[in-house]
Image (tube, rainbow, N blue to C red; front, side):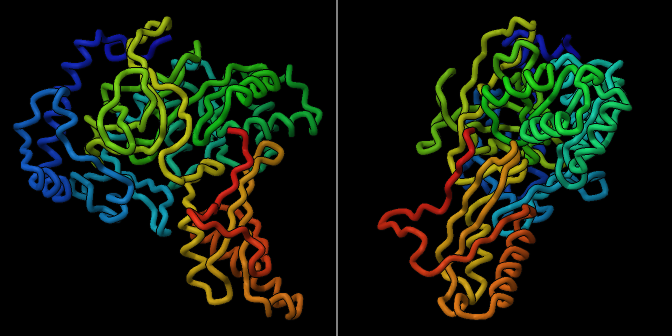
Length: 432
């Protein structure tokens, strides 16, 4: 099934013309409405009229996550706040979130690309969509919500957590499409067995999973346990949220909604564009966003692009499943985490030493986070209550800064291995 055949099945030349028109308009808008972009373009002697087609894309400056932090909270918005009808945010390295604003048209665009996502997964208006992504500032829940309504499906806004209740609702309400992280899908499958619920009594037939990295082996396990089609979806808050790209039922790469988001692949070191099929860093330019339009946003995700038409009939470019990142960001339970966030917390505390180790693992199909911290020797000689109080204090500060539950383990000085080169701060035991 195809939701919007006009744009999803365009010829490459038609898409190029569409992108060119929208890019020219977008560059004009950000130049006049966003001082940050006007300054960047003036610094390199670039004027809006210099951009005549999508072929001029590489003349535009890059945007990074740091640029969004430096302009916190609304400095990159291209419209007055009176036109912003929704705010979402994602966590940042300094504790301040990356803020995203949406106009009414942006929300309509978001619903459109999610409608495409769900339709490409095989969903339709007769489905009951069980959304177990988090609601609130996180873009997952509400993003899938409005897109599901757009295709006419029945939406169950369960959000995350309370696994027993999730399964009861899935059983009693007739959920046919599951939307959540892949790790939570596996966790739900195990809980299903523990609760002795007969899988054959459920109507579930497809799942749309994203917000964290997952392997083909994990996909197979989900499909075997749930007896469903497990579809990979991709998005990031800065671009729009979920709906940037998604697999179709053939699962041969994620179709990018390139009439809204132009993808590029660059060398993360030289920043030069790379050819089709070559792996590099994924970059997006938004060409229809009004609230927060972004020029050449560096996602740090590593992937490649394939412009061959898919046998589903879509001609949209496909991106390969991301193979890692060009920076040190971790994705844990759908939340972005940088080691520097934890380092900032620890360096602000007098009781801790500047030596720590982050250990990420996957237990019972859910990500776990442990932070080992060196503390002064006297804490190991004090009363147990003092030791426990310090542990809780560090845990509280880390959780407040990151939004993630964490297990803090205090260790003696010199316990954590030293390095003459770059310190190894992270051990990721997940097989992703």
